[in-house]
Image (tube, rainbow over all chains, first blue to last red; front, side, top):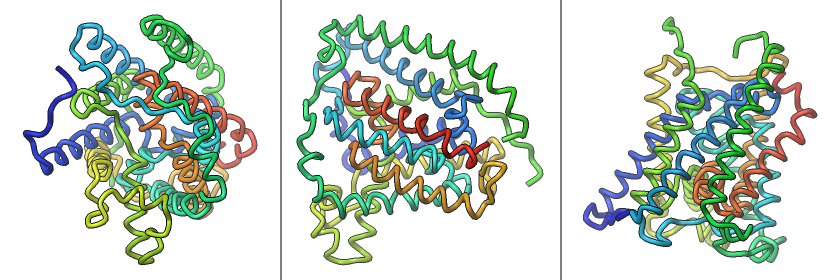
Length: 199
Length: 172
């Protein structure tokens, strides 16, 4: 039954497992081309939709594997962490994050990978992240109530929010992802030709 | 470096493999992947070291420092250590480790550094407001169908696409 009981590994063993997990994560981000801000930014100019393809393929893969294992009774019920929903801070934070993404060319994980392969723009993005987090801590008291309580819905899932069975939502996500992949290929065929210079 | 860089992996294949890593994290630890949490912990520890007492007064940063004796003893810190190692090994195997700056054709490298820092700062602010990033919210919460994570994900794309036209000179 998953998730595993890691007590046998001890504190150091568990931390080593986190380093290993991070290793595979960083390895895949770099292989996907996400250490390159021009590849990432291309998503927003529609000439290389790699970000959308990788993200949604990863989400669909993990969703199907985890859902399948739950159906087969291999997961302890309620054992997986579901990010609690703080709807409005999440949406406003997401919009701000998107603005930072298109200006800076990275997100946190990809900037670490970029920095690891000696890209200076990646390193400056990481420094910027730290600065933004310090600024957030300093000004948070100005909107503490919004951050703590606005749209605080707890651990709510899409099936609960939409009032649909989990299997139906899983199917809808798969169909939506396939639709987006077809659209991405069409958009790349149209806008990708304009990209002349190599990245 | 004379060696030619390898091409990036097919995005669908990369996505499937990334999804397998994400699934593995859920099966082993009960939670998904994270990147911003480790950066936040390191930032909190650095602020404590540089300005003693400052982070302690800052209720938000205190929450980041899980144990006051060893603020860096936190799974997210170990995970980003692995991310950096994995990125380096992948880049090395593919001939992509070299000192350089990625920038749009109309932008100098120096200007790009400034915009990278600015974008990072804006993203860092957004990350903390949204309680997570593209990894910890969009990928991880997305896979377990957290409603808030999906709202966050569409907001990220919305914010980026809304601004993309106005900052096109940075990239095209």
